[in-house]
Length: 138
Figure 1 (spheres, helix red, strand yellow):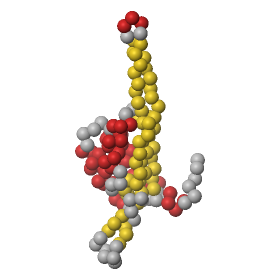
Figure 2 (cartoon, helix red, strand yellow):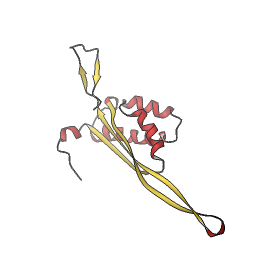
Figure 3 (cartoon, one colour):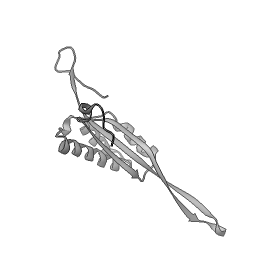
Figure 4 (cartoon, helix red, strand yellow):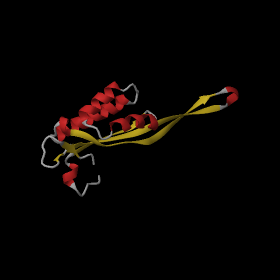
């Protein structure tokens, strides 16, 4: 296990990684691009209303990351936002389908790895006015 040098930064983020999800990278990427940088509550609404099959495993990951943040680190779920969300290609499952005259046809089933990182919103007040809140998306 590699430890971060900046331990203060790693205390405020909850990470979750799902490996070998039986889904195309491009189909999962379409959903991940919609939720990157959004708040936790807004992400839940978006994922529940999306018509794509890829939204359900991503919704489970976001729930899991928020549960990790609240139970393990004591963070409030309302203050979380998705700081990093990425989809990487996984292993390709290869199967042979029998064809005519003794030939075979290769079937490729792609998998992907999905990583989601939740961080705490940091409220920054500009110009001394408390009604304008801006939170850092970095």
